[in-house]
Length: 272
Image 1: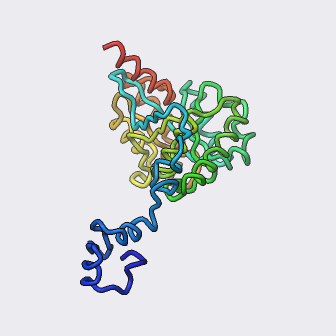
Image 2: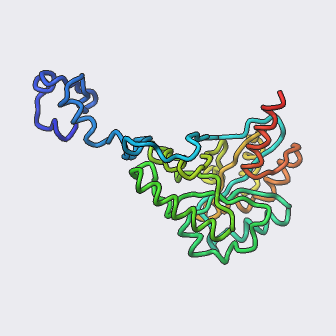
Image 3: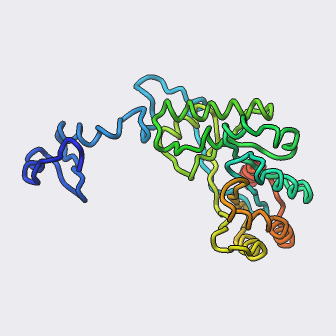
């Protein structure tokens, strides 16, 4: 129940224009109800708000795209890796990709970039780097100012490393709130989620089995989510990366970065 309504009986709540659903007081048109229901969710500037104040919104072009996959009939697939860079497994992933000449998109955590820049320095040619927040906090729980400051800090770290400002954002856990959308628009990002996730828990100690599972599930335009740091169970996916690459190529798939995938989708749409 909302904090301001604690201790009230159901009859008291109804007299004040409130309805109780699942233990929560919901407003029925009174100013008192409005105050209770908005106490934890500010209209503007809070985690759920897509606006900041009442003035002109500083959001670049004022447009924002959220994508889960590419809109294409071509057999294109984008591999993405989150949470790095780190000495743990990022070099292994980069080595495998280089061996097979596969481009990928790395959604990097800004603090990790600052801490482990040497791990990836001069190794990102042909790859793409997107923003994955500063310290992998849940951005959907932050207010507008906090979300923007977090992303801006990571944005600058990635730009310093690569020489190119990132154009893509993947929020930690795939969590979106209004403040995240507002901050992403201010930074002129495309918001990139995923349409297929590596499922290491289902294939303990079976890299080949995991690779077959991913290969079978890919379809044109798939964005695959993987990780190049984390719990050791994730090594199942990384150790099977060569099988995954070979399996997808045997099905006629070409590997591209996320931006190239989305660009292919735009091209196919405009030529119809």
